Length: 80
Image (cartoon, rainbow, N blue to C red; front, side, top):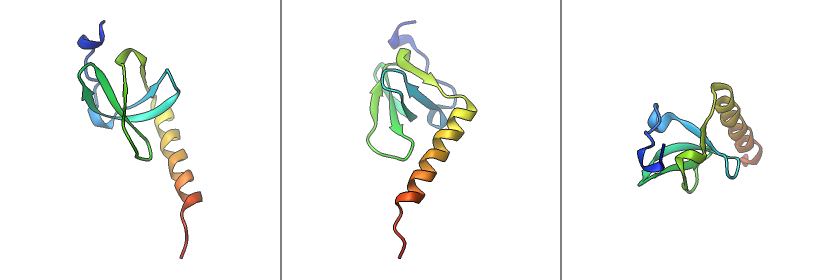
């Protein structure tokens, strides 16, 4: 399958992927031509990822990514 013919994954913006080139995990925000646009779990700048380099996360991997982000935020949050 060529990138231009790659289907948009089911779940659209609720889908999470790993960019296998870098190991980064991101939420699918949409498409930019032939590439997926992934946003880091905790927010931030989107990055393009070719569909053939994106691997959908399993339910457990997604849960771990979300939990890691929550833990990271709680450690860095300042208290009044």
